[in-house]
Image (cartoon, rainbow, N blue to C red; front, side, top):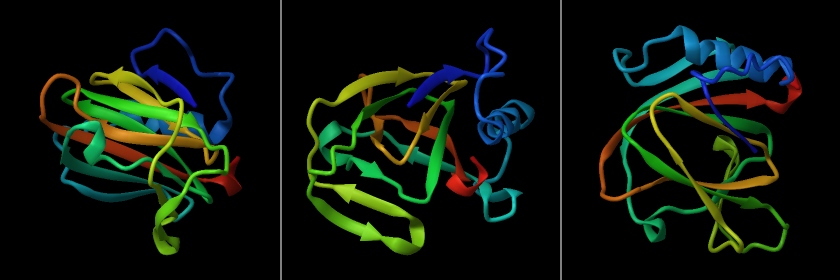
Length: 154
């Protein structure tokens, strides 16, 4: 997992090229004024999902993983906590959507949380369980961008 901000002094030069391209896309676009939807960056290998959602209590958000894509999750507005823990391979699957490359787990152990504010991004690799959109202090609407990056690009 990587946690940073597009406003960081880091030049991101040590990141894999595909992740650098995703971060540049985040820096180069005004997501507040974009319509929600899916935007191809590099065809089906890298694309952005722009959407509005609402944060909620930890218990209402399911921990998830992906097998074929990594997520670059970016917060455009609002605030959220993101849960994270390594995937030990021991967690019970409650839902699996092959076509969406999405697996939800029932419960996870040793979960940590970070707070994201506008400009923050997290890179979640397939071995990173993550739980997005957990409320910080109160439920709120947020604007998120999730860039899906195919592992084939790494």
